[in-house]
Image (cartoon, rainbow, N blue to C red):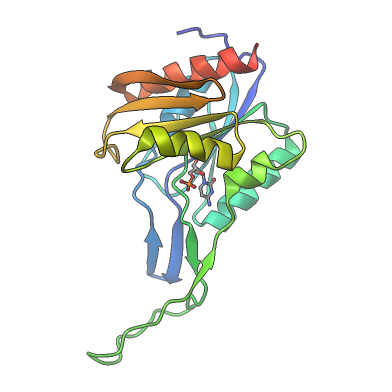
Length: 219
Ligand code: C5P
């Protein structure tokens, strides 16, 4: 692993799930441990980059050397990413977070009461911003890397998602039991096709991904 490949670069990374409140004690979220995003932040720091990690709620400690900003909702994550990009240009943006596609539009400021055995609350949803698409659409956008967690047809959907998101590199997770697990396997999609990073622990995979990102931005 080349420890100087990202020297002088700044990486901005999102990780973890987002949490969208229903009321002060309830909410909806996505399954994500944050482990892959945190491993990428760690590997980027090992490669000599300065790293800002914008994280939804996880049980993980901030990786050594990495500046972490903690958020809860997708809107907060979006705003933190945009504020960070406005204050410090990033060379690379890696969107690893499992962002909730919808938030609860009629969230309550008070705990919802169970008033009867038959009535249930009626939740309404509003669309959250697509953080990766917002960053990719910026003029002077950093080199954008997206993730895809598909449950089927990854090779087909991955290539299509990269083009739809208008990003140079998209990373697919292979296998179904990746949430919270320490091992994974990746497939990278770029304009030339796709390539695999063999099954390994997440830090090794992250180092492989950082090597591939560095090769592309230093070209
Ligand atoms: O379209 P889909 O949600 O599958 O795309 C996943 C990629 O987009 C991931 O890189 C994820 O971090 C990013 N994303 C985002 N904001 C959203 C939804 C997804 O940044 N609201």
